[in-house]
Length: 152
Image 1 (cartoon, rainbow, N blue to C red):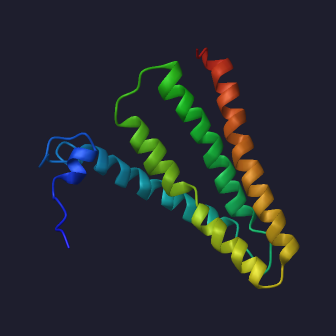
Image 2: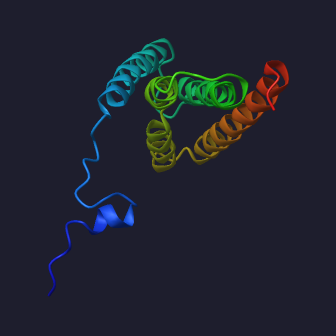
């Protein structure tokens, strides 16, 4: 049995062997964490405003994921095609705020719970509404933002 080469991962990633991978990443980690807190608190607030009865349709979660996808579409176009943004804007808003706000893990658990509870139709409608709504919202946001923002 051979011992793994500790520098192999660096070489495969195109880094010099023994490179300090996390050097300089503190600001990005900090803004992602801060954004994640803000996004998660917003999601929690929506959950309080839109509770779901057992076997009921999780409208709050659908709304969160559709709105988050729409905002992600706007963000991506604005920071990559419309104007130059500070390097920490995308990690803060995209990964942090919107990553904390959207909740596709809750989507998966809700769908499985509905299915396991015998609510097959509700589960199927929920899955379809979330996927079609989120993808559609993102595509619409990208298209509209490009037109309105004068992107390339």
